Length: 318
Image (cartoon, rainbow, N blue to C red):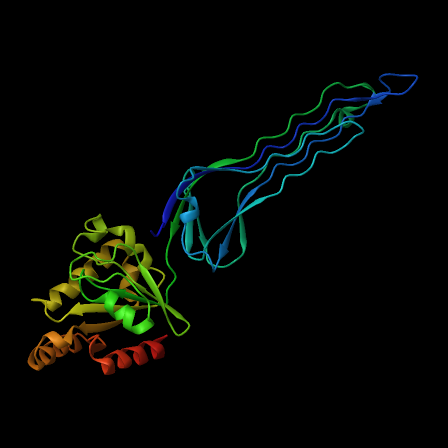
């Protein structure tokens, strides 16, 4: 199961308490303040990682807490600073600070501090002064930051296979990339994006889009977001359908509602399942889309030449 959205409460570690201690000598049991400072609490950091596929590691976690710093001790010993926690997430993860609304896009392997650990408290030796030679007070460690974040994964694929349910997207992906998506002759066989590699280029099979998807119908916006990161959209249309133009425009209308920028992406029309219709239907359908000034290919998974042609077009396009 692809986990592509989680909400987490993330807290930095608390700083260690400063120590209230006094140096002892044979002559004086309280020869002077001797308490050390507490160590700093650990921060919680996120880092993009190309080998991390999804957010599954957080599926059953609601909270993540940083390590606490060590307490100060006698002989002015400073408590140990806690280690930071580094969370590895897929490249393409969007992280929203729910309180502030600030959004961070994880687009490479650089690190981002989500919550900072608290500062270690000062020991009583730090409070010695000319007017107070024997301070008993030691500072407690500071609390770590606590924030709530929404993690949202947007797949980064160079090519996205889109279209309504049962348009043959999974079958095309299998032939183009040798991946093994679930395939069936009924709508919504694909319940999560499948990814294969076309040479060095990731290609994703985006689950079927229907009218109302931008409003949450069918599989809804859950998968529309995965289209945002693609460079090229391959719009798969079933040649056996009754109104191909309406099928095409329905998906385009959902793009407009969800994010109009999707309409600007490079697009290739693939008229699929050509083995199931006559030559007359194919010619009529090709003419329909070429009149709309759309790059149009005819394809069938049972026609290896058409698969090779599609593969060549895609490789040149990326």
